[in-house]
Length: 77
Image: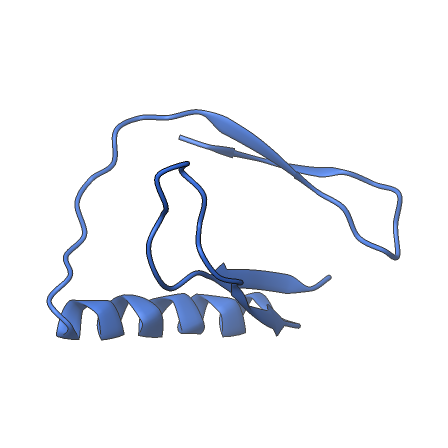
């Protein structure tokens, strides 16, 4: 299993679309991706950004792998 992060930098245009292509990072192990997310959050805090609690939202995402026909779902709340 691979873990993937896509990072977008820039603005969202008037149509609600992200400008530019994402930078993609792939990881073999869960601990690697968790460390990267932790480092990204710390970097943003150092630049003056802060984290706030998000409203409760339900969204289901499906991921597909080139190596498998299986679908894997996530529910964010």
